Image (tube, rainbow, N blue to C red; front, side, top):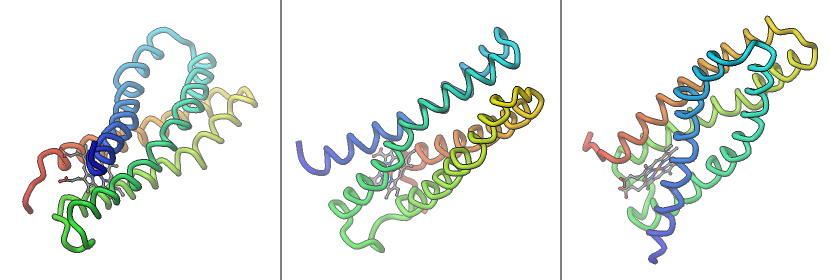
Amino acid sequence: MTPFASHYALHVLAAVLWVGGMFFAWMVLRPAAVAVLQAPERLRLWAEVFRRFVQWVWIAVAVLPISGIGMWHLRFGAMASAPRYVHVMTGLYLVMLALFLRLVLLQLPALRRAIEGQDWPAGGAVLGKIRALVGLNLLLGMALIAIATARPEF
Ligand code: HEM
């Protein structure tokens, strides 16, 4: 396996893990939880789901720029000589990272506090914000993968 191929494999695996996980949470687990669980159980389920998912996303968040910059160096050399879609990918990664940090540092602690205090209306409000944030990050991630694979020449 060439150095480029190993970077490429890690990069795509990390993208699949992060974006695929958000797709599953938003499109599959969320409606299933609404259909089956009452508010207290649903909030506890999401706190536990995010506690586990976030650990994997931290890995993806680290692997994506390391492998991405490695491929950038191996394929295109200087930063400025890479095609525009690679610059767009890097910019969108930073936006996705900022949204992920907002989730981890602000919204998940607020969700845990609401659960500990058994304040279900407050927990429901935080969960609504988390849903919007993860939905936005999912759209960004899917757009990013579409751009990365289509390699548009803009
Ligand atoms: C600092 C962040 C990132 C950098 C520097 C970066 C850089 C790169 C580079 C240099 C390539 C190879 C392009 C080519 O060979 O034409 C690539 C491919 C790819 N990147 Fe990224 N990337 C970053 C973040 C992301 C993120 C956040 C995602 C998705 C969530 C992503 C998804 C992909 C995919 C799916 C490919 C494969 C495209 C293909 O060859 O079909 N990247 N990236």
